[in-house]
Image 1 (cartoon, rainbow, N blue to C red):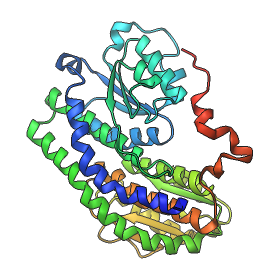
Image 2 (cartoon, rainbow, N blue to C red):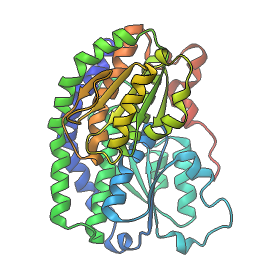
Image 3 (cartoon, one colour):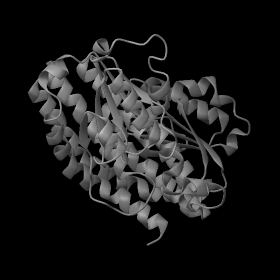
Length: 375
């Protein structure tokens, strides 16, 4: 199979992945944390690098809304080197901190380092990984397994979705034990998440053809801005990451509000396309309406990925099936991956540049796995 076909196979597999794995991950989560431990949680940090960080970003708003706790997504470097970098805290006080460390491989050095460091400072550590025998598996006190059936080789897609499923499962379990949500409501949301399988399948049918056509039009561009707000900022980060990894396009993720402060001023706007993830139910929806007009005024080539019933007519617009804003990043995975796959195919670029030439040091993820741990 070609690398494009491999990527498409991964995308095609996402609906079945959600249908079969969401409940299994929930079942594992129910057994991990004891009720007194959950009662003691006062703050939650979800940390990761790359796709794992975007997964943390995607689920943090939902967990915050469900639990009422301070919940933040944090880059692994910040968690490893900059949390509590001043006066050493008392370990007993930190026991109220739940640290959720996400790494599918379990070998990302900064994630391992952050987990070890925060555990020593007294935090309760929960690793989310497909590799329980990894360094992360040995560093965290508890492990939520996201081991999923293997698929074709392509830039991370299935692992990203599995990581989000784990994050939602953690949030729902905390909420029902803390009684900020009834068990009936939590179970209804679990059913809703499993039912998103159909939404992903529909999004796949909607996205594939138009994005191939768009990639044909955009193949001369070498940079792009990818925009979103709230949970969709994670979609922007993931979408930008796949464009870099798959097609070598210099893609930058940006908040839709911050775009008006910063990226708005890019030179040659007609040569720098924009992809905007814009859930119709989003709290930022009114700003998205203004954003479309802004893009038109600049003449920026645009792809608007939305489930809104109606937006100003500009650019290419993909109308995805409607979902709650909390869950939009799951569905956004489909068009984001399609765009990366199609763009790489159109310009004939090898994923990850084949880990050859100046990129050879990334072979086997050596640059992220072999960095020295400082705990």
